[in-house]
Length: 398
Image (tube, rainbow, N blue to C red; front, side, top):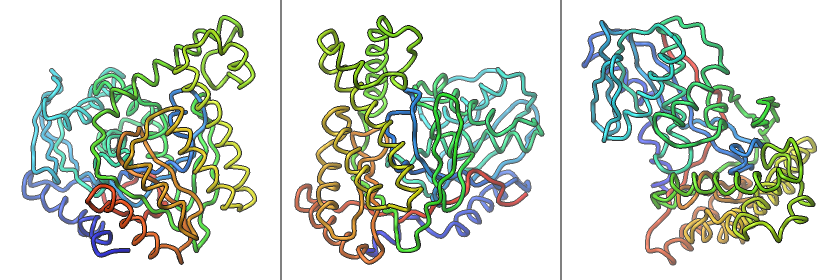
């Protein structure tokens, strides 16, 4: 990869942890608990989670690191290392911050208190190398990571699934983004060199090995801020719910697009708004792609798996309409390179990253060709991240 790609992490994880721990010592004069909370990639299954469908994510090496310790009284002091900003709040009166980032932390505190958990004030320094706005779910890493850390330092005894649900609820209710459960789930349940197929209705899950030595997962960041992502995310969710409400008249017991077949959708097409029809059609087909992709992994057929990724991008671009020209250019350029098995946009859309599956021998050509195509269209270079699949949230040092 290019020099710029190699330097993106801002330092090796060990250096980052050391810096955050040192900042905590300087600020609070205490010994902290150190926690690593990873970002995630989603190989396939986009916008299916809030439709109670299937997803195939993995936790990655990019992470948020927390240095945290109990404080005194009901005052909480948090410091965002990468932003150089601090925020203080009281457990007795949580008020949304105009800064934005403190709300992800306060949302977790709010949900813990609503759940009847006994916590006192705390002190925290956090930071990491998950690229913000790239679709790797830095928000879930902050939420689930803090929930995990508070569970540890206050001995709350909450099980992993409870932490997942609590972190999701924090984003839904305090932050105000109606996200599904995938990001928080993989943050807690991730395993090294594995992807996780999650049933977002039952929360049943299954691991699939994803560690062919000559394959690389490369993310390409468009550097486009996803300004439409949150608002349009909620619009897409409403459109899907609209389709379900109409179809439920003809299929008693139908609760989500997970229950809808293409045949049922097509049978009532004349009654469905054309835009709503496209949204529903995409979700139904994407759920099928996840199932097919898992069958590919059982056979170690990564070429077929990659084709599912290309198919996913086409649906996201044409039917769900959450892509953008920058994402499309990256996928188009990748698709023409020998050794690239699959590529698609990843995350909520309207910017962020593409995720690419390629053979190691193609990495150098991929770097040059994709950068050249992007530069030619937009006058700037994308950023590249090679990701490895790692464990979920864990204690680094106690």
